[in-house]
Length: 255
Image 1 (spheres, rainbow, N blue to C red):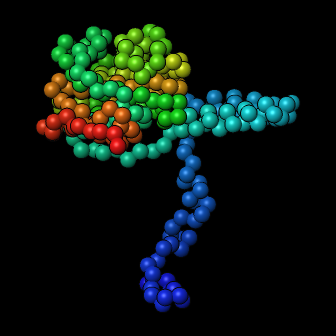
Image 2 (tube, rainbow, N blue to C red):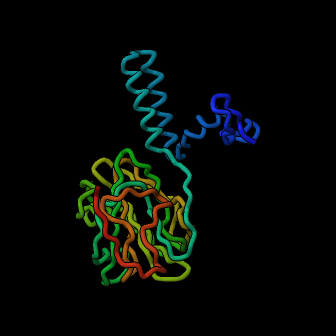
Image 3 (cartoon, rainbow, N blue to C red):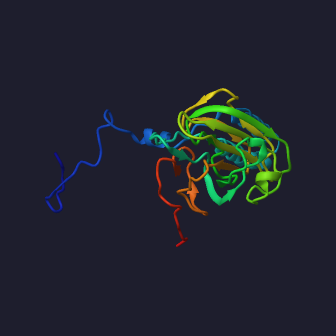
């Protein structure tokens, strides 16, 4: 059943549903808002309290703090993601831009052995979602914290010199995979929600890094990445590798 157009007298397809069957304008506006992660509630609350205080005492600064409060809420946003579930897939641990893809010997603290692995590094700017998600399903067999510096997280040496937290995950089938949260120039706090011995589902939220940072994924030996340097990733959705595939490393160019 179409909507009749009096201009050309040709039926057009229905372009909206009744409000009882679809979204109203209010629903559409509401759906555009993203929840704030619980770890950010205290920061948003503190910023909001300061905003109200200075709106009373000194409105010019109060309005600046209001903008800052909105940014804090934006930083701690925690959107839902549609996670692919096929066995063998490795998904991005975070939102950001692929800063490097290299074959390296993993750090000794990970306990992955001396064999080279492909390391996929994703740089998260202060405007990216900072919730990290499990790249594969499995059990956390090792959880490691390494104190260190706060260099620019986009630098290669940040993987070895910066403060970091690592999880080594043992999938139900196949070799171990490591994912490492790395602090940056601005990041001063790495948070994890899981512990050694916990089981994770692919794409499950497991931690966050407060402000600019980096996430490294160490693939199993002999496996290649299906992403390219410069590519944007969506945590829990972008496929980093397919452990069941023999596809060679992809080539790409910026256009």
